[in-house]
Image 1 (cartoon, rainbow, N blue to C red):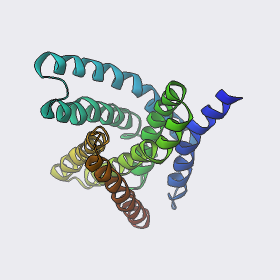
Image 2 (spheres, one colour; image 1 turned 60 degrees about the horizontal axis):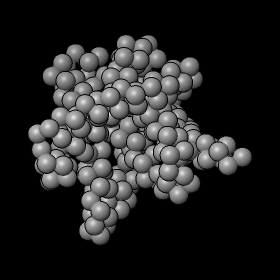
Image 3 (tube, helix red, strand yellow; image 1 turned 90 degrees about the vertical axis):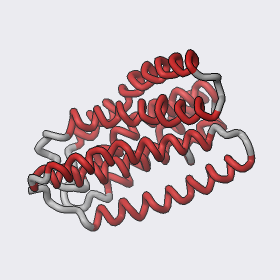
Image 4 (tube, helix red, strand yellow; image 1 turned 45 degrees about the vertical axis):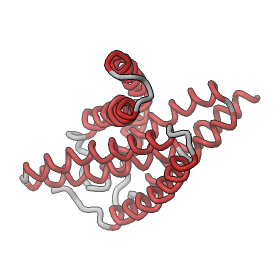
Length: 232
């Protein structure tokens, strides 16, 4: 019973956030089978991210003293953030860019959040059974919403890139495609960097960052939902 409760608590935050984002797609709901594929793809991408992170950490250990400032910056922004957001973006692009269901700008957010929460849910299950109830509850308020927020920003720019492709503005498509990966990487890297600080100042900055990010992401997704447009 204890392991079943732990599993449920690991899954529920991601499932709740997925439901909320899906419900904000007001004009045309996305096919459930596509959402399931994205969730599964996001979950499987955790293994690719783990391999990249192990390789990246190994290289860093050979060229830099561990826990130096440069080491920590490269580890959090490149080894972890770029690896995780990169594999999520790859899954997103492969499964949705040419999919005929991708016909509204807000669809990009639904798709990106699906991939991100698939990643977050499996990662959360792993943490739950490795570190127990307290870690699971803390991650329900931090890491899982964090992945959803990274997905919101990824999907927002991803949807705009798709609009510009349809309009024939290749330069703008490229610009927003780059932003759809770069912005989540920067946010994710800063999140991890401050979370690993271990002192009172970094903890306070980390908490302030989470609160600000929650507010900004909520405003952004509400605006994108209201301004949803047909991609023609």
